[in-house]
Length: 427
Image (cartoon, rainbow, N blue to C red):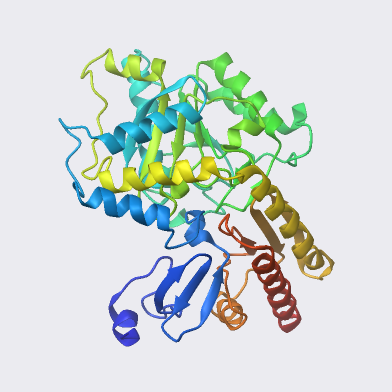
């Protein structure tokens, strides 16, 4: 494999072309392992950015793709429909809250967020409230790298500050400070309440990641916060959007994170694990009310239509992934992963330079005082036979659900070892 050509010509994510981070050539992947061209096998602690929940090269998912390939790989969704899209929509409507009856397919998580924001804006436009044109969200959030999605990411600690002049100006409240197991006090919700009171005439929707803020800081917060937020949305006539692209499909110990709070949004974004990590696909679900209002005013249609919308291959493997997840004892598996992550990462809490160690479902996080040296830390993990890719001050694990106890022990042991070595070297 020509790594010199890669370094010279291929622009990898979040990487400089002047001094790109090292990349490791992959030969294949199976189960929980990624095999490098060198023959080294790495236990995947990332689920390929949280998507490959069943691991790699799974026979059930492979068969779903192969079977669909014999019929058609793609057909435009304008004017056509097909069985894989119908089956997937049936699964999603059946497993999400009853009021979420309409399914709009798109290409990726960021686009699902774009769709949700456009739905909210067009909803109020159709309802005769064009002044409601802004989004309210909370700090430390992350919703993707496309333009509307960037506008609702944290403008200070997020990755998109240099685009601030051209992004829509949204309204940001303080991030929830109540921990996952804590009650949300009136003080905790006060800042967002004040934002509602001051700006409700121009707020179209609130968007946030329920219970777990992902790439914005891997923060876990109280489900009670969502219950109070839902009441504020109802009081001020504001739509509620949940971004479950990272948390959906059992990652937090519930099939969807919203179940922790028993709160139903008006619009729900799904992606990442939707296809088990096989293909890019996302879905934005909405209530009958949202769809009806949008469809009842000029131009009478929702103004969005991705070229690869409802791709049959992606829909087929998504159906297979959902059925596979539903057929396994996923609640028991996630509880076991949570228990193992908590025990395995606990030694990190004793290290000087570690701010916090937290675990929820199949998510384990070690937060440091200072950002890590990505290239150096990545190399240390590879040397220990694991694939862990930190960001900023966070070293975290989101393993596939098929991970074994021994593999979890190896992953957590590597995290503790590398964190200790990194902190000792920096100190």
